[in-house]
Length: 112
Length: 117
Image (cartoon, rainbow over all chains, first blue to last red; front, side, top):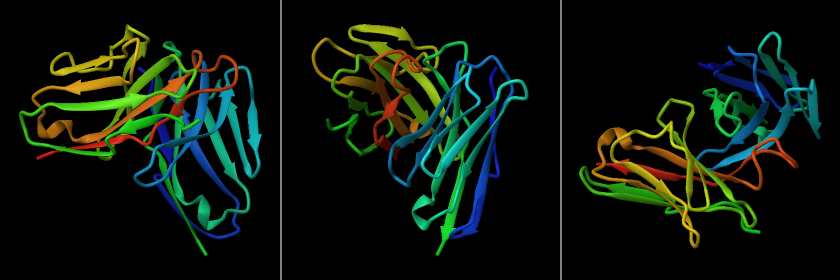
């Protein structure tokens, strides 16, 4: 059974800092990995999707890497801003490609 | 394109009542998925539907829960005889193809927050 773990559970940083969020998964036979952002009381916004054959994806200040063999992914956020404050969720799809296995998320607070 | 629309946003039901949650997928999306987020837990897959077909309901409780995606209209997640443990956020997502094919993964709705009192 796929288990997805995100560390840390919560993180508070001052504005402008670069930061890294970690995601690990127990079964390396994944189809793809996706990072989402969840704002309080809102839905999920897809940030980056990495196919199992890829090593990283970039979008603006965000960069996500994938190391399938070690079962790890990182989300790097450059020059953090208060507007980045949200919960970041990592999700992998594996045997059932349509079913995502989510971690519990990292709650990020960026202070001005 | 209004995105994935879920209603109601908030729903309060007394124990024993029925809850009906609606999801309209993005235009052109024929795949719909329901997820549940219990307090302090990650999102859990419940069911995957295509028009008029349930493809996989392995994540849905066997009793009291049902889902449909009719030829016309939104997808419906129905919970009969609700109990306090059903209190959660229920999210719907849609995709034009299987996730990972083509342009990307899911598009999620804003969720329905069900409170059972």
